[in-house]
Image (cartoon, rainbow, N blue to C red; front, side, top):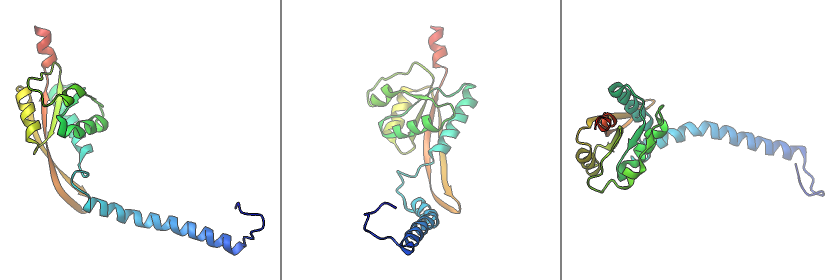
Length: 173
């Protein structure tokens, strides 16, 4: 230990300091699972979303429909955190079309490539936007339950819009 030269540190002080440090570490290990359970039980709904599960589901559904990896995901302004999460958690790591995210409220925005669009099921503006601007997209509503050990929370619902075949239609022109 580093101290002033005239300060006498006894063996008993060293042992007490070491015991306090070890006790604090053991306490942290014992309390952390309880804090984790409390966080799951009482955190706000916005913070608790099954985004890794949604990402896996969306990626698998895209591959089943297209036989291609997921390359691009978009969302309107209020749902863009979902698009970012899918990009992060998906094994395909699709890109995010920021132009569409930024201009989601502009009417007549058209897409010229295959894309997965995503919204919360209760976000009317986002769903209305993609229904209007992706009229040929296949719509899939998914509800994912949130569970941890023996505890459950409300389920969260999302809408996925599968817009594919666009690149081929443009090539045919």
